[in-house]
Length: 77
Image (cartoon, rainbow, N blue to C red):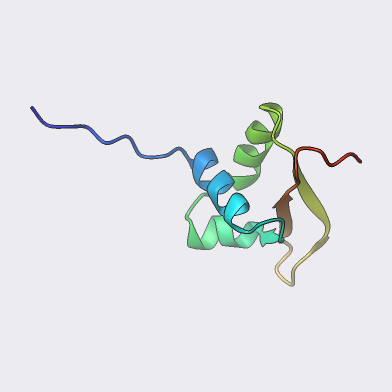
């Protein structure tokens, strides 16, 4: 019998990167070009709908990409 390994979803992969960044900004460009997740914003939106607090930057990089960061659970706007 062969064990089947389940790959993490794109949303899980994005969440892991944001967690590893420890509150630092991560460019949307990184998700798209390095992680090969073409619909990164949709995955971030789905994480937000699950109650995960992800902040989108007001700024963009020179290529027009926003950045994202994971906020602590007790952070209020």
